[in-house]
Image (cartoon, rainbow, N blue to C red):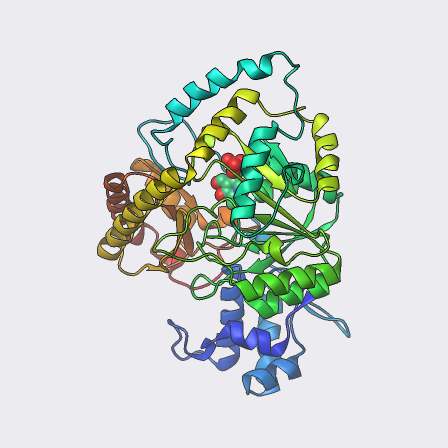
Length: 485
Ligand SMILES: Cc1ncc(COP(=O)(O)O)c(C=O)c1O
């Protein structure tokens, strides 16, 4: 899956490359090479993409071709570019750089830790009454074997109603209940992705999605999101689909994990059209769709623009309700649901009936529960933002208008070092590289606002303390705005 960045696209990504902070008297070619390395390190420029020809980039940047030639030479020497005569130059990272990661991001049950590694809320007060009511309902099911590969009808009806209410008419036979959104993703990938198939994901993205893709031995390509502004670069995203023709693209359009971005309606429409033209299946993870904050209105669901069964939506109970329920779902065409159910029989047969009944009761009270969650998240987000402004004023944070996470741009490529140091003072962090593929994203940190405000403020205080200790301990490591080795 080769994709290419055009001169004007790279020029836009490079922005003010000639006056980046830290530049003093370095020549233009070195500044340009440094800016390209920065884009790679931040995951904005994916690995394995073809850079524009030297002349094209020179024209786009309005600089001499010799400057671009020298910058490309420096990038080749530092191991950031591979070139073949006549075929062009591809982005890469130096061999020493690759960071292996299990890809898994799971909570650990350590009660003394403030766990900022997990972006999920504690259960709502309504959970226990819902569980009691579910046990009352259970006898209705006890006369049967209890295996419902697509889920019990009443839950499929409730989920279908939710989509219909969002403007996407859906029938219960288009829904398959799964044991969580992660399970939904894994099942979809089992059917759609064979080993070596190309899959496009956002960078940064949800780490356990990367783990699921690694398990299918997918060939992963990334679309780099901006940490501020619109997030997705329409031109580049559509270009990656059109040129790369991935088998599947996995996107999180609502309050993306980790950046919090919300994809605009027109891009949704264009992505669906591009996916259809390229023969790409679009898997849309709607985990956070119930959690807009600040009265933010939601664009239509991505699947509204789908006329050809290209879009598979996945979602679940974990974010608005409780992760411990392990209830998620797939929305697809009825035949796709049948194929997924057949595949699922070889995995786990069906989801637990009792948990599905609990979900039915919670969904019956959705408006009240979700309103309370949003209010809680707003308070917690604002407490976190306030603490960051006060204690870590050099970090840059775009205010997320929904979801449960913010994506902080740090004052240096220190994310992993900071996570190690924070662990020592009782705070577990998910450092930036966990959300990317190649050990990039060291200048970023995901901070969820799912814990009570006082704990968030406490955690930021501890992080700030170790941040300044890092300064003293490890100065030479991260003063240079370069790729981390
Ligand atoms: C984007 C995204 N998808 C899927 C999941 C997993 O959700 P579930 O608990 O429903 O499996 C999460 C949980 O953090 C998530 O953020």
